[in-house]
Structures are given as structure tokens and as C-alpha cells.
View (cartoon, rainbow, N blue to C red):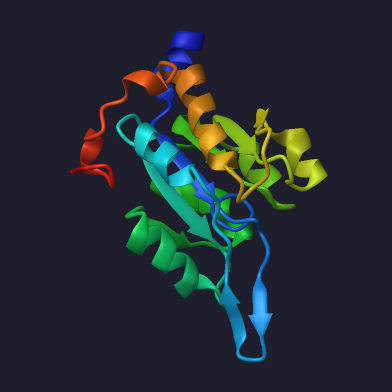
Length: 177
């Protein structure tokens, strides 16, 4: 059965806020000004990219342009604005849930975990969300939790990543000369 599950996983969908970021919003009198994205996550996502379709979602309308700059502009990953309440329907409309790993941290992400093949939560996720996760990263969102999730996905569904034997020029990513 484990080998069947390995073949089935094709998608990795991540919530941005609280997963790629620390979940905090920084406001001034002009409004939301910035978000804090963590280290290592982009590198690990590039290692995972040859194996899975990677997509990111956010429900943060007011901070969408900040997220878009980092995720679509800098990291070159697809980003979609999807309400937390609509996530499972959106996944079902655009992907096969039984072929999808989802990483989220919020109160309602447990509903997504219940509908996809595998759910991952960062260590600082809402406690009820962690109860519904298949895996909880040792680190918090915005502090390499996504990198840990990528390594876990590779070990569980593919082959473990051998850091000492990584090709620098993989998949046309940031590492190209």
C-alpha cells in the first residue's frame, strides 16, 4: 500500500501565511506593510519541484501584493487567492485531492487535511489543526518548516534527499549558473 501511495502523490499545495511566513502581519498607519518569509524554504521547494506540482494559496486579500511579489515574482511558483472556507472545493476543482499533500496552519485547515491524501502542519499551527495533521514539522512557519516538510515528503513518498550529491543546476531554478 505504501508504494501505491507513493505513486499517487502529484501535488503539494501550501498555505502561505503561517507556513511560508511567520504568520504575523506588520501594519503602519498606511496599512499592511510587510510579511516575514523564512530561510531555506525556497531551496527545499526547488529540490521537491521535479517530483510534484507545487502551488501556493493565500486568503489574505490586503497582503496579496506582498505575497505575490515573493511567491510569484521571486520564487516563481503559482499563487492563488482562495478563501480558507473555499480551499477544499478549490482543490477538488483544480486537482485530485487523493493525489495532494496540503500544508496549512490555520483553524480551518483541518478541514482540508480531512479531504486530501496527506496533511502537514508547522509546529506553531493552531492546536486543533495539528491534531488533524499527518505530520507536524519540528520548526515553526516562517522558520524552515516548509523545508522540513519538503524533506519529509521526499522521504515518505519518493527517495530521501542526499544533500551531498545535489546537482547545482537542477530544474532551471535559482541555482543555475
